[in-house]
Image (tube, rainbow, N blue to C red; front, side, top):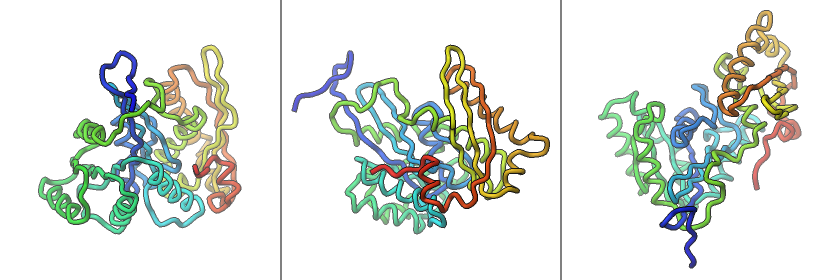
Amino acid sequence: MEKIYGENLDIPMRTGFIAIVGRPNVGKSTLLNAMLGEKIAIVSKKPQTTRNRITGILTRGADQFVFLDTPGMHKPRTKLGQFMVRSINGAIGDVDAAILVADASYAPGDVEISLIKRLESSELPIILVLNKTDNCSHEQIGSTIRAYAELCDFASVIPISALKNDGVDIVIDEASKLLSEGEWFFESDELTDQPEKQIAAEIIREKLLRLLDNEIPHGAAVVIEDFKEEKSMISVRAEIFCERENHKGIIIGKKGETLKKIASYAREDMEKFFDTKVFLDVWVKVKENWRDSDITISNFGFKNED
C-alpha cells in the first residue's frame, strides 16, 4: 500500500476515530477539551449535559485523532433521552477504538459493564480512563483498577484528572497506538466539524446549566434562528425553548436579570471562540413537552447520524 505523507513530514499520516463513552457526569467533555487544548464541548456539573455527538479533531505531527464525545449512558425517560442513547450506540458502530471514562472513586456499575460488553462485541480496543483522581486516595484508585481488570483486557488503564490536566497527555499517547496509516479526514487546523450555529447554541445552553437549577435547564433547548457574519462582527439571534410558562419566567428572571446574565456570559465565550465581536439577541419561548415530540426534537437539530 502506498504511504501517504503529510506536508513537510517524513513519516506516514495516521488517523483514527475514537469514541469517548461513559455514564453522565464523569468528565468526558472535560477530557475532550483538555486533549484539544480548546473548549469545544460544554461542561457542567449537572448530568446529561452533552446531547449531540460532538466531534473533536486533534492533529499532532503525522497523527490525526477524531474524537467523538457522546452523551452519558443512562436509562432514557423521554424521546430526547432515547435519541441520546441511540447517539452513543451509533458512535460505537462508527469508530476504530473507544475511551471509556469512569470515576476513579467507584467500582464498575451496570452502566460500565454494559458499555464494556457493547464495545467488546464490536471488537474495539478500549482505553480505560479513570478520571477525578484529585478527589480520591491512592487506595481507592488501586481498588478501582483491580475491579475493572477483572472485567476486560483493556488496551491501557490511565488514572487522570482531566480538570487539572493531569495525565491527559498519557491518554493521547496511548490513543496514538490505536491509529492506522491513512489520509486525514480533516485539515490540520480544524478543531471540530460542528457548524458555527451549533457551537453558538451549545455555549448558550451551557450558561443555562450554570445559572439555573435542577430540571429547568434539561427541559430547555436553544435554537439559533439567525447567524450573520459581517466584516467586524457576528450577529446571532437565539431562541430558548422551555416546557412550561413558569419556567420561562424563571429563565428570564426578575426584571430580565437572569436572561441578561445568560446572554452576557454566552456572548463573552462566543467572542473568545470566534475571535470577533458578537451581537447576541436572546428570546425565550414555551414549547410544552418538546422532549417527547419526535418532530420537535428533529426541528431542534437532534438528528441521529446513520
